[in-house]
Length: 212
Image 1 (cartoon, rainbow, N blue to C red):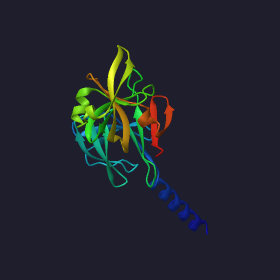
Image 2 (cartoon, helix red, strand yellow):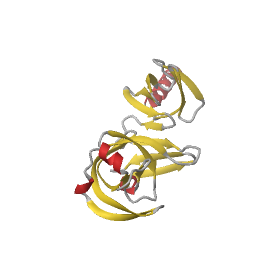
Image 3 (tube, rainbow, N blue to C red):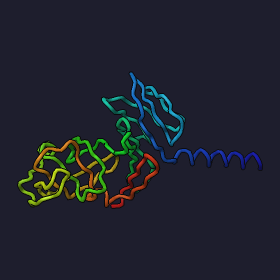
């Protein structure tokens, strides 16, 4: 009986381990290798093709990013970014790591076009500069004109709807945004995106979980 109970316990432990969420942070890149932190543990060096004890496999290394296989699915993680993969989860989630200034500057996309986001809870809308809007095939002239206040004073903007905004494993459709008359160094990821998230801060980490 004791042997049977022990076997059952081992089976349950193995099953539980197999469905645990994996929190992967990419903290460094080398030739053919990636420096990662998984589930807040110690840093470990992973070569292309190798698999960690947590079941995370490094598939390829790209410029400034790495592609991992997690639970049989590829996930691209940018340098300095962290993603959470929860098997069977109904709501996508991603974890971001702040830079040395405490800012969350992360890669993403608008209408399928790569962008660089700055998470800004003080911005009402997702805000794009003129050049980024053109790259994302947004015709600002069809939007609603208006004015907004910036650090440099009032600025002319146009309110538009974005087909999609993607950040990590989260993709939102039909997101309200503003296009500025001038170029901007980053896209401000404002509350028209963040209001649809559950936001959890833990030190330098911010976890976004899609609500709807």
